Amino acid sequence: MPAAPHDPPAPSACARAAARAAWDEPDPRRKAAAAVAAAALTGAETVGSIARRFDDAASPGRPARPRIVPPRDLPKRGPGSALGRATLLHAIAHIELNAIDLALDAVWRFPDLPDAWYRDWLLVAGEEAAHFTILADELERRGYGYGAFDAHAGLWEMARRTRGDPLARVALVPRLMEARGLDVTPGIQARLAQSGDPVGAALLKRILDDEVGHVAIGNRWYGWLCARRGLDPLAAWDGLAAEHGAARPRPPFNVRARLRAGFTAQEIRAWSCA
Image (cartoon, rainbow, N blue to C red; front, side):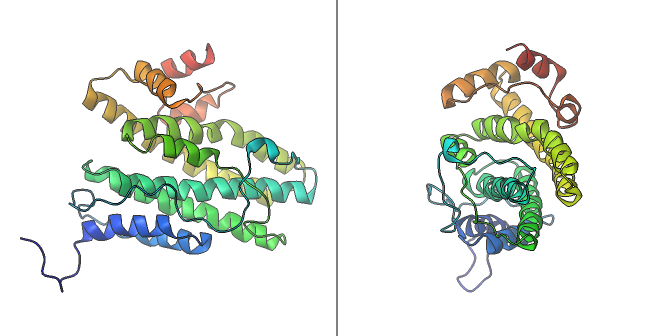
């Protein structure tokens, strides 16, 4: 029986509606706080099996700045200067803001999946919000704010392409684009440390440790969805990449981190030989 109009919504409705509200929020700080609050709604309740369907909005809420430009138009600055290090941290903060929206999008966009799907991605949203917040705080400590430098929209473009299929989403966002961070972050950490920025290097270590878990969630759901559809995971990935215009992962790989995140040795070998 439907709830009476004056009754509060069920916890399940609250969780997915809160994810959508956070996704729509244009202010980055408020978005991060709303993502943390949405993650706290999970508890033990069912969060996925609700009747409500949300409109298929094109993109999440975004502030007026940073200006979004093609990747080729972003200036190349190394970590040898204070400005270069701030630009680098800003780029990572922008990735983390997108990662908040990616996790929230997985919660509100895809209905009728197991409850654990929604809990997992709400957890990820909360942790990505923490990453964004510590990076934004550090940028402000250095005299900059989020939005001070231009950024690109490559990560969200792949989310847009895969919005019709949760299998394509986990195949090509956490398992491809976000997993790339596992490969490149240790080198960025080393360059920051060598340039006399131990604070920046420590922030990236914390983020990398969490990102291994986030990519592992993507790998787990990719395997589950492939099994549900009777697909071979390795062959299915190639088909999804071709369908959605994604390139194969490029070596060198952080093999240790990728194995911890649930990639198989077979996958890593296949991509290493591509």
